[in-house]
Length: 142
Image (cartoon, rainbow, N blue to C red; front, side, top):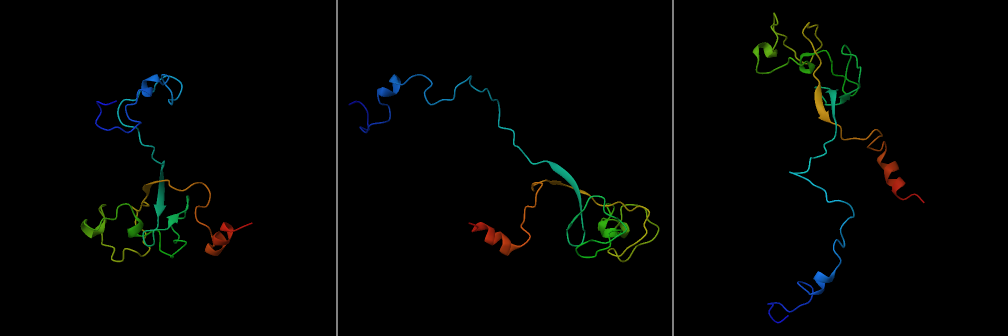
C-alpha cells in the first residue's frame, strides 16, 4: 500500500480481486453489438394541411370544400402540389393563362392536393386537454 501515490481506500484495493467473477453484471451471454445503436424514430404518416392556417385536414376531406378552421378554399393554387412561386405563372404545369389570385377557388384540370410526410408524434388519444381549467383541476383531484 505504500507504493501508491494516494492513500485513500477504494481504488485499487486488494479486495477488488477477491470479488466473485461476474458480480454486478446481468446473467446470460454477453451481448455482441457492432457499430452504433439504431435510433428508434416514430412512424411516418402522410397528411394534408391547409395552406393558409396549417390545420391538419381530415382523411377523405372534400377538395371542393373549405378549411374547417379558417374557411380557405381547398381547390386553389396555394393548396396544389404544382404551385411553385419560382416557375412561370407560379405553376410547374403548362397552363394556358395565368391565374392571378392564388388563394381563390379555381377549376384547374392539373390540380392535385399537396400532401406531406410527417412524423407521428401523438398517441391515438387526445394529447391536449379540451379545457385548460379542467386539466388544472384534474391535477388536484382527491
